[in-house]
Amino acid sequence: MGTNLRVKDSVLHGESDGKTFYEIIEAGEPFGMQTFDQSIIKLFQEEMIDEDTALAYASHKSVARRGIDDFKKIRGIRTSDIEELALDQEYGKTTSSRQFS
Image 1 (cartoon, rainbow, N blue to C red):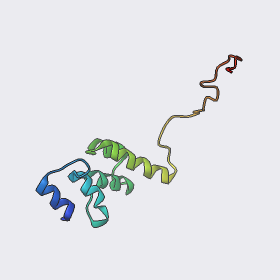
Image 2 (spheres, rainbow, N blue to C red):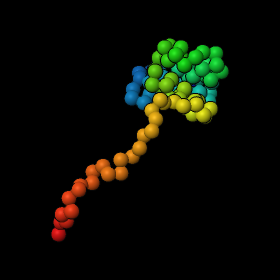
Image 3 (tube, one colour):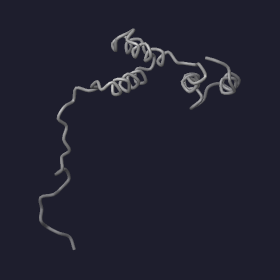
Image 4 (cartoon, helix red, strand yellow):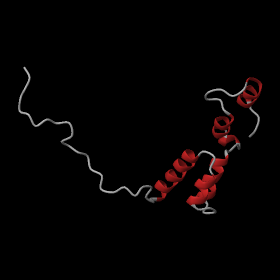
């Protein structure tokens, strides 16, 4: 984590909704800051760790999962084992021919 106005404000006044240190670091990636989860995702992308290891050590598993899935989508790798989903076109339709006037 580096120093900027958001960090200084959070140190002086404490964390608040939308101003947690995690969120500040996450948003500060263009300025050289990175969260542990961002680092784990990069290690996965560089094939230095596998998916199971990345998720086992992630501090925010949902963030890590989303980052891994985004990377896998870019590579054309499946992110789910769900197959053959179909929209039920008849859902909610009644079979009654009665019309309202």
